[in-house]
Length: 196
Image (cartoon, rainbow, N blue to C red; front, side, top):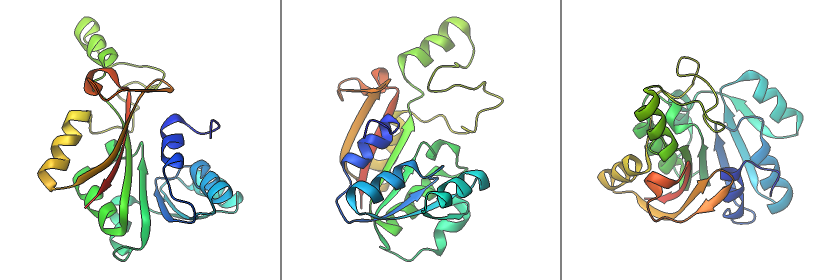
């Protein structure tokens, strides 16, 4: 699954064969195609960008155009084995409400996001006094779709506050896995598998 972005590869490696999946913010459908082709998953997608929707549909995927914050309420409870939100949580107006919807729709939810407490981000702010532009956060602050700068510790606190169980957690530094030790400082990205 090396052809996938590292967080998507983690998710793909942990989805059960033949599962029913909703990929929210599915982009061009890269993850969905792998899940369908390699694991026989019944994958559905929701994507806001019309060009990405066209790309996904051209791959033969079942993707509709929609907004997670407005359209997830239309899905019935427990419609999917997994609801997936990869690199999208920080772009939503109310990530807490989107998270609640994911866990209502899916029996489990995968959530991945960039960790804004990574040491390079901290160093950029400390020494340069400016929001960082890095390989994984490649655009300037005024162009970024990120409106909430979430950290691993912030996310864990939200989960605790809402009584959400962590079934699995993976931390990435660049394209490689790193340990959970000091993940809030050392990991550039996090992937969580959640359950009510």
